[in-house]
Image (tube, rainbow, N blue to C red; front, top):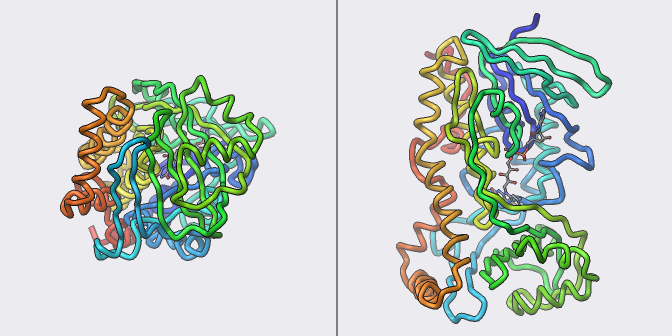
Amino acid sequence: MQQFDVAIVGGGMVGASCALALAGTGRSVVLIEGVAPDAVNQPSFDERTTALGNASRRIFEGLGVWQHIQPAAAAIRTIHVSEAGRFGFARLKAAEQGIDAFGYVVANRVVGASLWRALAEAEGVSLRVPATPETVEIGRDRVSLTIVDAVGGRERFTASVVVAADGAHSSVRAAAGIDAAVEDYEQVALVCNVAADRANDGTAYERFTLCGPLAVLPVHDGSFTLVWTVAAAHAQRFLELPDAEFLQELQTRFGWRAGRFVRSGRRASYPLALTRAAVTVGTRAVLIGNAAQALHPVAGQGFNLGLRDAAMLAELLSAGADDAGAAELLSQYAQWRASDRNGVIRFTDGLIKLFGDARTSVGMLRNLGLLLFDLAPPAKSALARVSAGFGGPTPRLARGLALSGLRTRG
Ligand SMILES: Cc1cc2nc3c(=O)[nH]c(=O)nc-3n(C[C@H](O)[C@H](O)[C@H](O)COP(=O)(O)OP(=O)(O)OC[C@H]3O[C@@H](n4cnc5c(N)ncnc54)[C@H](O)[C@@H]3O)c2cc1C
């Protein structure tokens, strides 16, 4: 029976990144993904775009994929935060922070194609796609997996550790006996591409409206990508509106700061919840990305956080003991990721609760907050740093350092 050091289940945005980070580090890795990366129904590399922070850009540079992503990425040079019906707003400029851009907006399909093209040639990484685990048996000394491919073929192998990168409804998390708390926001994110009568100028808008936060982000072809949070009860109506009426609703809620909206693409919808695993490691099991925590997209942090999970796990596995599933290695991972994870969850959930509270006093506080924020450079710098992570050790890859050779150097 074949034996691997690491079995990663889920080759979406985070799992594929983790496998690539482990390439050439001396670890034998198998990546099991249920849906081909270029399939129309691929749930991770779908219609969405992702706002990548600068730490994520550096990680992708380290993985050798940024050069393929960058030509299709739009740089965010200004962030504009406002609230409908109130006069306060905040504007952050990257140049004032001494950086070129706060981040980059890129289509998930572009990220998927770049990661999987690199994985096809990655040293030490075996790919099983499309395939899903039929059984995951976690023992004291090893994990045994049986996987089934698209034509019903079965394969059995063992690994020293299993990595759950199979998303918010992770079956590996369940196999590891780890509970997850789910808080339904009773909101749905509507996602679509829209074009205005003028090209975007690299500004990312975040607008808090009565019906929920609305993000309008720049796309590299001059258009915008829209992430519009609406109450679950209203989602269907917004999905079914004719384009012209949809654009009118958008214009009314968003205003004219980006010009007149003239065209909208296909609309997709995502129900929103905060899913949070009770712990991020178990016996010979580690959770990364959405399997560990799936967040509201309001602040564009979910993937950025998950990528830091992947980078840190790959770093510890690259440098650690021979046994990739050693308890000390896994508990070090949990400890090093804890403050970043907790900080991002609190920040994102806090934003939703603060702006979702309609009471006047809270409204006034928010207004004052936005105004002060616009006037106070330290507050701005703090937000600008959010994309680097919320504390704990920064992964080597996010600092521009390589992982290969760490184990042989001891
Ligand atoms: C509308 C929206 C906008 C967002 N915008 C941003 C943003 O701008 N910035 C940001 O940082 N984050 C953003 N996010 C969050 C981001 O999309 C997620 O954090 C990210 O997709 C997590 O990646 P993942 O690989 O952990 O999980 P997923 O994307 O869920 O991928 C899981 C993968 O596992 C596979 N899989 C599942 N079960 C199995 C199985 N049993 N066997 C084999 N394979 C399996 C799936 O096919 C999939 O490929 C957004 C989220 C939403 C909903």
